[in-house]
Image (cartoon, rainbow, N blue to C red):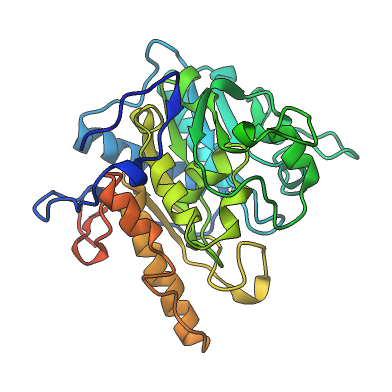
Length: 350
């Protein structure tokens, strides 16, 4: 797979200039680890996460320890609002495991998108209590506008600035506080640089829902559209968002430090997403982990469709979730849930 050279730090639209291709069928799939949970307690998560990380290190030969930058980032998800966010227990368990591997508390940082949703889900302290959920760990709020670098952006001629939920504050933050922008500015989605400039590596912690435009909202989307500015514009047409997700996920600098994706199935939503609706959620005592976000999304798409079918709803079609095929074409991962290299935590097969 050949990427275009980086010109003035502008990322060219890859799908518009590269021929479509499929990953070779004999490419070995990245392992997917599964660990059964018991009660979703902090102790339960702490044990599960440690076992999963040990398995990954043993299998890959890669130690998740501090390197030159001595920092690690955790991309959390809070964008469905209260009730459906990355579980605190998972984050606490991961922090304990990373501190055990030598990371200082202040060098394990969390990255989220929207300040209101981060506060409503408890990741930021409430105004009434002021309680800090993760003392000593920085929480970087992307829509504050403080964590985008003007030299690092995804450049796309796709529709100009558009926000389907009239989130004017997010639009202004993405434009550096301006309420109006130029056509050139509207082409740019600035990337969250702490994850790939400041950290030795980063770990993606998605929560799964369906999505009316993308089909599935999970590992790929949490690492891309919920990890950059000016991305609501892509939802104006079903043809634009899947390509944007795949192209952003294929950016070499973003992928280089993207170590793992860990998803808890404590709660996931199969219809009506991405906004939380408790009537359409399932819960399974399970953690899934893989370095490949595409295969993880493909597996969860099967779970979402099984739940939709059981509840009498139409499944999400391949056309509705074509970002998975696009991501495979760009070498991000394999969209092949029929040939998953399963590993049960501890080394046995499920």
